[in-house]
Length: 173
Image (tube, rainbow, N blue to C red; front, side, top):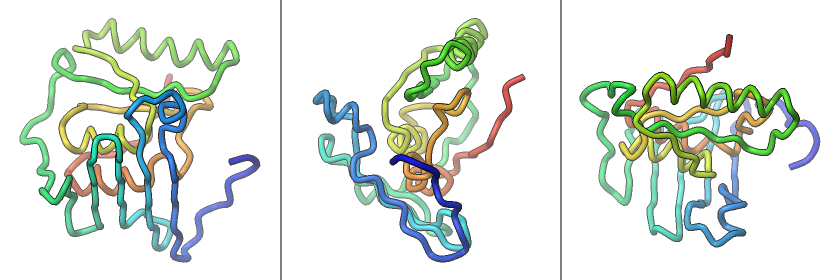
C-alpha cells in the first residue's frame, strides 16, 4: 500500500493481506500466508491465517480460543528464560542510517543479554501464529519505521491473544 493508512473506526472492518510474507513468496520461500482479520469497535476480534505451502490453518475468535488445523492452541504453562528463548524480529524495509542503527542496536542488546537464538521469518502474521503455537517465544517489530501495518498483524494478533500470548507496545530508551 501507498499513502496514509486510514484510521480504524468503530465500524466493522475487514483487514486482509492476500500474501503476508510477499518477499518470501516472490523468492520461493514457504513462509507466507493469506491473512484475514476482522475488527469491531476498532479491536481485532477474528483472525484466519492460511499458510498454503505448509498447509496450516490458524483460526481464532475473541472469547473462543485459537486453533491450528482444528486443534486448540493451549497457552504455555510457564515463561521461558531469555537464555532458552527463540526471539523473532522483523527489519522490514527501513534503510536509512539511523533506522538501521536502531534495529541493529536492539539485536546487539538482545544477543548480549544471552538469548538462545534470533530469527527473522519475514511474515508478521506467521510470527504471531508461531509464538502462539510455541515455535517462537517472542516477536518484536517497530524499532524504526519498519513497524507493522494493520494487515501485518491483525489476524495474528487474535490467534496470539486467544492462545494466551501477551501483546505489548514498548519504547526503546
